[in-house]
Structure formats: C-alpha cells, structure tokens
Length: 193
Image (cartoon, rainbow, N blue to C red; front, side):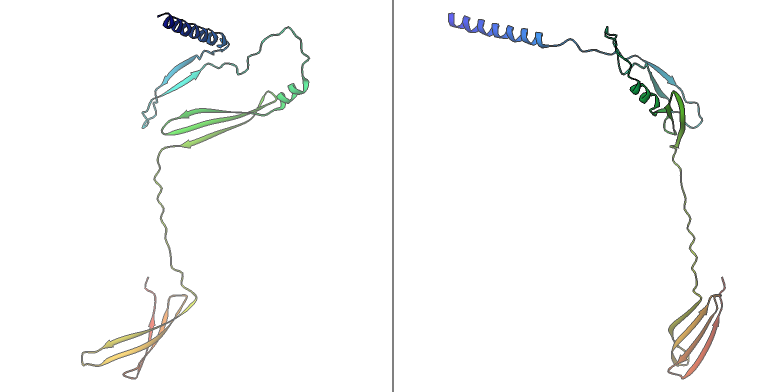
C-alpha cells in the first residue's frame, strides 16, 4: 500500500510539473487582426442574366504596423526617392459573373496615375459556324489517258484506248481508236457548269 501511494504521488508530481512547464513556454504574443467586412447584395437587372451574386467589401487594414520609438532616425532619402519613382500596379475586378468579366488595371508612379487599361471578356457561349467553299482549280493544260469498252445489239464488240486534252477554259478534245473494228473516233467536250 505504501509503495502504490509513492507511485501515484510521483505520477501526480510529474504531471503537474509537465503542465507547469507547458504553461510557462506558451507565448501570448500572438496578435490577432479583427476582420471587418460588410456584405452587400446586388441584384442583377440585366435582361437574360438573373443570377444574383454577393460582393464582399472588406475594410482595408495596413500591411505594416509602425510603432513610435523614442530613438530618432535620420530619414533615408534614397529609400524615399526609390519608393517615389517605383511603378506600382493595381488590378480591380469590377464585375465577374456567368456572362461578363470586367477588370481595370492601373499603374501608379510619382503619386500619379500613369496608365489605365480595361480588360473585358464576354463569357456567354457563342456559336461559331465555319463554311468552307473549295473550288477546283483547273490546270492550264491537262492530258488524260483512258479507254472505252462497248458493244452493239447486233453482237459487235468494241474496245478503244483514248487520249484527251483539256485547256484552262474547260474545253476537252478526245481521240479514240477502236482496236477490234479498226475505227478512229474524235470528240469535243465543253463545260456546262
């Protein structure tokens, strides 16, 4: 019994010491910045686009917090001039929804606005139809080779190899020779359409 009391008391002392060390090492130096925001509900009244959206307007807070110290410093003129002549670019989204995206880009230097541009993008789906018309270009002069096979009702059979010549205007001359019947044929063709 005496041994179990010693074990329990040692355990409780170690546990209390651990909690005390953790409490001493925790720092309460964390600075929390309150986030102030205002919710503005805008109802879209453009015909054909009835999707309402929320615009969150946040209250700006400085990125750098300056503290007043009792030590006086000499102003750094080079740093002030460098900051004065530096070009700063800002971008502001004016509108973004399912139908349109509008962004304004500004550039500032020497305490003046030195450039402004507006980016506009139509987000509505657009159907694009492409029509391709291909016209066959005839060469200036073309020569063709071919043949004909035929027959008649009285039982005559014919086979004639042929040559054809066409010009740029679409006219064609042909010359055929029937090998079986020993006949020579000539033809002239012109373009209808």
